[in-house]
Image 1 (cartoon, rainbow, N blue to C red):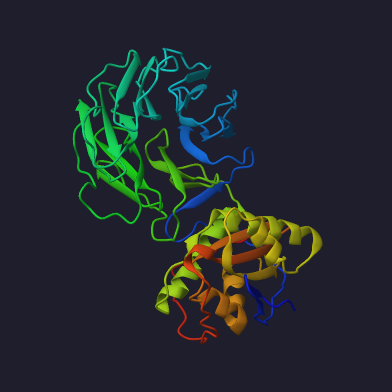
Image 2: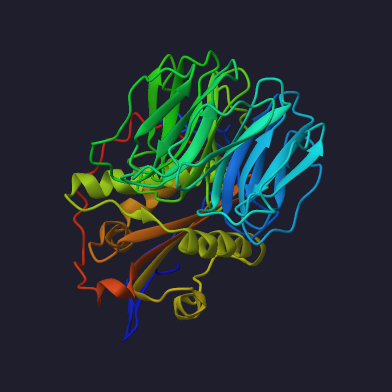
Length: 434
């Protein structure tokens, strides 16, 4: 028996309750909103800034210039003050890394066609697009200035134009004779043979747009916002998103080579696939599923969704891994709080262990919701964010849920016990097991 606990900066408050442990295994299935979390970063602690699909997998770029390769070949990293963009070659046998200073670094069969490292830029470079031949590319700055190299033709830019919001990405048409720029407000600007298919400009967005990518035919495009919401225009098929799950850490988007799927990547290295995006099993699938279940319970009770907190998630994942080695017990939340880059005025923690047919998300969530004290933590109005950690070891599932409230929002006013009813109808949710 391990009680979940809550802590504030001024006092410690324990919420008593049981943590359940049983035995099981089943196969992993995808979560209800169509996403498949395919991996999480292990190669660098720096934030992720871009992702690029290859015929056999994908590449992820961290802001320190480190590349993580999944299902494809890692060909080198570059030490940069700030990496800005990544693009794989058409063959998948090479890639370019672009620095915010306009430097370009080519690996494998990627051709170096020039860069801007010798110039002083008005605004940093934020994105890259390549031509169909792979023999040229465009770089774009946050001010909308476009720079062309190799067989990439300059077709216009938004440089020296007063923009409502900064440009955040560029994507080329299938022919390579046109491109689109997108602003953080979702405004789209088309050049060359790029057709305008619509935008989000003028709409009120929950989170800013962070990327755009073309459909395979070039007759449409996708946009993604930092909350994981995906927006499809023209012939680009909408295949799902993680919008509405309380996230704000999505950093990049890439279509699969076939065009029948896409990846979104979070700043902490979580890669989520839709459509034919290559699916690998992993505990992050369970974490995303748990987040959706928690927020469904809160919504039914009229309580705001918990935002995904990368710092709390890192602590939760570390603790679940520790429990898998050393047994079920609570972490020291005071020590966790002290280690955070920002202080929390309130924190709480639920833990769970299950094996055999209980090593699954549905069992973890049900047992925690059936316990009055664990349920109180899940429904607590004082909490504004959460980080979840799942470790799957030898068919056993170890779960840590760390709840938080930023000190910047003031001291928490605890809502206390949460009635057992109402309960969210989760029958439409796919289950996830170790």
